[in-house]
Length: 315
Image (cartoon, rainbow, N blue to C red; front, side):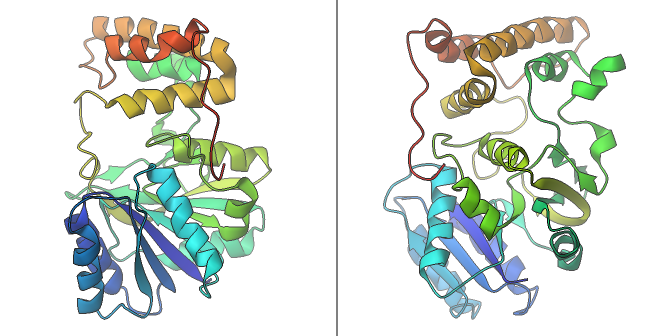
């Protein structure tokens, strides 16, 4: 199947160079086109990446686009997809890859088989491992108000069925959503959905995309037998219990208001707070989501003082 890789770079030229090298090692028959979108890094990223493409002898199938502004991760991916539509590089699939990933010995036939054997499969996400080879669950359940309680209090008893990251999902097959760090989607489905919602600057955009795809009747599949290396947090600096950036809270708020309404956001925040209390009583460590930042971000919307910003661009 004709496949175009789309990578969004923001001041991560070193990591993207390593990713390009890992793609090159797969051979020329692996991928038809590679589009790297630089989201106005303001450094020498564009020149460095073009030099890397030349040194890897990938000039015939790889291109670096200068976005001229940083409108967010989803917007950068949409720009890369739009470029393929306007060029002669027609694709059956888009493969969205984070800059902090490496493609090593990935079994693409397993991915392609899902799309070829089941016509209602719209999205397939790969498995992931960290640099030490430890598997990282990348197929998950949708975020929900009750899931916010479970995420903080811990998954126990009947509450496991609302756990976003449930070990029972670590098998090939349908899931609610897959990580955007390594996500395949039919180009026709991506165009039907209007691409990523650019109202999400960073985080939650793939959850929203998968939710909209499922709403339109498309299956979302997790294929852990085909895996990439994910250096999670390396490109954003967000990892472990380090406080989340402001745009994470804004994206979370957008997700809950968009799919559950303001009442759903109220429920999610209350469930998060209660779950955090239970989690602390159970000895769970600090959360990357901080109480003060959560309430400060959501309060204007909860009080009706601020409406959810309109989606712009491709949605």
